[in-house]
Structures are given as structure tokens and as C-alpha cells.
Amino acid sequence: MEHAPTWMRRDYWENLCNIWAAERWQQTSTTMKVNQAANPEDNMHTSGSVSFATHQSKLEKDLKQPPTFQEVFDKTHKKKGMDQYISDRAREIAESYTQ
Image (tube, rainbow, N blue to C red):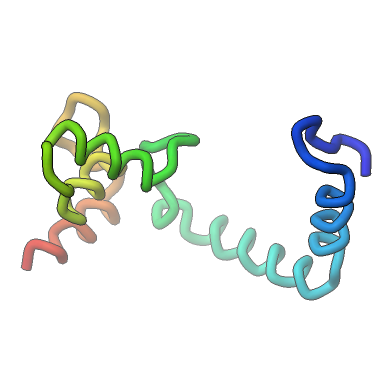
């Protein structure tokens, strides 16, 4: 129960810790870690800690209309100020949406 966030109620934190300690959760977590390690390129994006929803909202303000999926994907998978995707896999996915 140490390292509890100061902004979270203690009973909520304890509930989360109990969920995370459960065997089923641990098995799922291990599976996900293995999957991410096996395919690191599939999990790359450039949005950092900013959520995709926040990127979408900012794009909507900038474009003055709801952005397309392609616009959000490009914003979160291209290097800033460049027209280059962060990985071959990201480029392949983007190209598959234009077909």
C-alpha cells in the first residue's frame, strides 16, 4: 500500500492494489508484457503521455471540424515537423487506410 498517490482516496488505492495482485490480472499482465516485447514497433506512437482523445480534440480546434482517423493517426505516428512515420509498421497501417 506504500507509494499511494496523494490525490487518491486510500480505499480506492487499496482496491486497485487488490485487483492488480489477483492471479488473473498478473497472468494478463505477463501476457501483455511478452506481446509488447515481441512486437515493439506495433506499440510505437509519438503522443507521449497525451491521450489520443486530447490529440483529437486539439486537432478539431485547429481544423475547425472533426478530424478524420487518418489525421489523428498521422498526428500520433509521424515525427514532429516531418512527413515521416516513426516506423515501417505505422506507414503500412496508414497506407492500408487510404486503399
